[in-house]
Amino acid sequence: MGLIFMFREIHPKRSVSFRTLPKHERKATAPTPETWDCVACGANTAPRALGRARVKQNFKRYGFSKFTVDLRSEVYAVRNAVWKLARMKPNGGCLCIGCLEKRIKRRLMPSDFDFGNALNQLPGTWRLLQRRGELGAWRHLWAKK
Image (tube, rainbow, N blue to C red):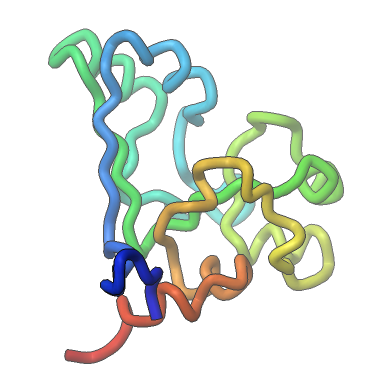
């Protein structure tokens, strides 16, 4: 079930793309990691997102950059205490959900996520959405047609 707005059900999308304009370049490149690969296992946590060097290159070449997240992405933000428990420094790279759970020695719960961060409003893998407690709202994306 999706969100109900004005008597119409709105379903979240399979992928979301953002176009970052030059006036937001500094804000966009500062938190962007060099690579979206998990620092523990090497899995790409955001297959359609660009690393910092490519983002800067796109700004120079095209005047904008694009950020895309889809159902194969595990892009999220957890509370600082959880990140610290995983022995990760702020902006110290990415971890897939499996590697983060191994490091903290437990399964993630919805209360571990920082829902004030826009990354936690995006689509993601079944595992990520399940841990965020949002699988019900996104379930239609995996329904067979």
